[in-house]
Image 1 (tube, one colour):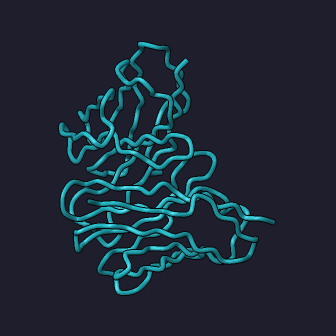
Image 2 (cartoon, chains in turn purple, red; image 1 turned 180 degrees about the vertical axis):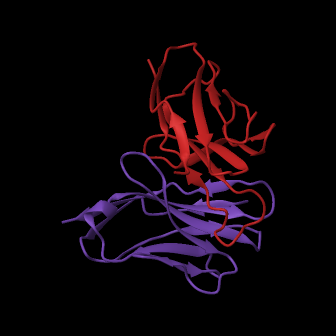
Length: 115
Length: 117
């Protein structure tokens, strides 16, 4: 069954340093998409980055990069040069191609950036 | 600007009342979704719709109902049968079909806070 696991309930990082948020997934579908979202205290879900299962290169979007290790079924988010505004909840999500159009979310990691 | 609009932002419900949360999108997306989020928790799927006049139950559909009469609109009704409705509700939409170059990214509204009083 489709499943997303985020094992870090909370993380701290010093301002201007890099941080990695872990995400592992489980699927039997060879074609799938992986997403990361940021949720600040206001509640809105902000799309950060996408990785397709057949993409040859790791996705990057500004200070965000996705460390995609297909064999390990992991899709970790790397935030470089952390800023105070990065403090938020971060969710990993997956959608399979086959079956219903469902997006499954992990339980999230709360990141706190320290000045 | 294109986006997803949810209303109201805050809603209070008395015991035994039905309430309806509005969700409108102008992204021309075929698929729409409702998620529930409890404090400190992840998102759980309530209902989703791939096309007008069709919708499917998600993982926690009991006590909720939806309609999809227009492509742009996907209202959620929280019925009196939902025993613990206090939560944050997120509406979302995406392109349907196979994953495109952008993965058919799912986009969210700003959410609605529902509290039972």
